[in-house]
Image 1 (cartoon, one colour):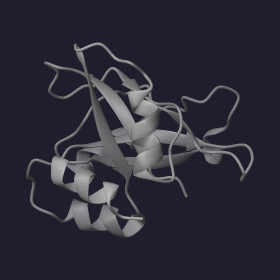
Image 2 (tube, rainbow, N blue to C red; image 1 turned 60 degrees about the vertical axis):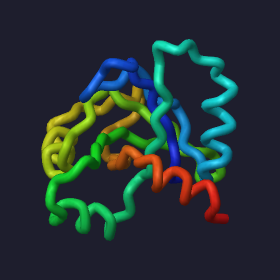
Image 3 (spheres, helix red, strand yellow; image 1 turned 30 degrees about the vertical axis):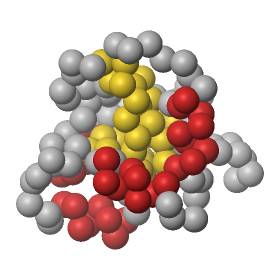
Image 4 (tube, rainbow, N blue to C red; image 1 turned 180 degrees about the horizontal axis):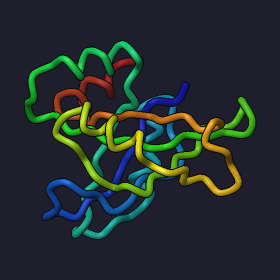
Length: 139
């Protein structure tokens, strides 16, 4: 399953983001290559994220708060051969995963012509610099 993506933030923004790329990637290299091709101006910052597995979600719910930031998106694909499409109307980052999950539960479906039961929620963690560099070297 695809598990990497990126968001665009304003350089001076602390808890919100401007844009989430509409598809996920199977590896971080593809994700970075796509982001680099965007030719962004200096007022925007690319921030990479990883979709959390169920085990990681449980782990982060019980972890003490630190510098981690979390977000959520709605994932949908009509064909198993396609990449997941990413939709996010709430462009907020949360300092803890539980608040993120509680907000997601109250969210309406963002995908046009798609019933909520066909959507999956993806919870993501913003990758810190060390995690990002480590991911670049994992095959």
